[in-house]
Image (tube, rainbow, N blue to C red; front, top):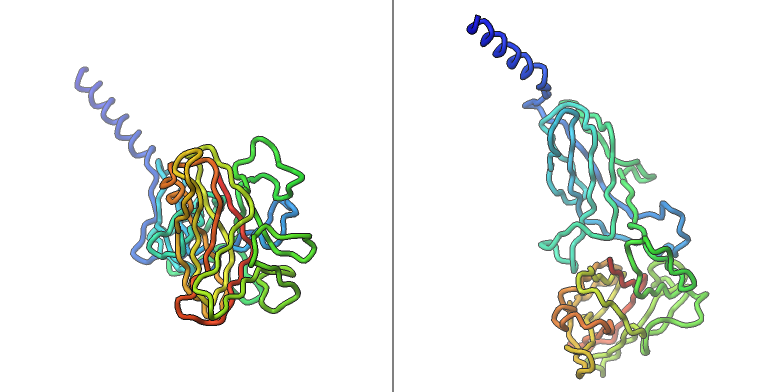
Length: 319
């Protein structure tokens, strides 16, 4: 009787193992996921200027979850555009697409950008030797997936947003011609209705003459961030004929003498606009996270050329 009981228990355990396991459709012939581009859009209809949403998402991390699995599967991080083989030919229950940017414009420092939302796709079909395109196809035929910023304090100075928002816009400048003034000190000036603007009707411009080794300017606002755990990023579009240093002016202790340090030096862009995400947090730490500072720029004319620095869609974000 004891042997019979043992056999019954073993049989029940075996049946439990069999019925509790799901057979997965692994294959020697891969299925493929394809994405050309990822954009940032105003899904919430915030009313922020179009320049708020200029972006340069360089890569994506893909995380897949299949029904019946106990854990997610990280498929990897892939530079865009990408076509990714997946050795499992069954519908992905949920696919998380994580926006990745080049921090400070350096390919070796690609990071998940903390200000962008993940995109969650459900029921993504996979079939052997077949390609599943992600997103929607635009007028040029490329496949684009859209994300958005996490909730932020309203860009308008007249509305600081609700207390539960995640991102604070500490400073912003779009150089639109409807503005009465700009947020930068001279010699930065606004140009409007010009082929050189990045978006909208205006951009900022600094003329660098041959006789100047360097020209300094800054955001004309004292920035105050008291929490040293905050991320601190400067986003901007830029186009420059000379090297451009971006940094911070502050003191190492409250009431101390101010110093200026550079976070990054940007190189000439050969007449092209570029988007960059500059991590100011590391430089801020060198000032012992002093709660007040200025964001400063220097056009460095070591070659003695006559040229221009253009900026647009400048914003300083914390989260």
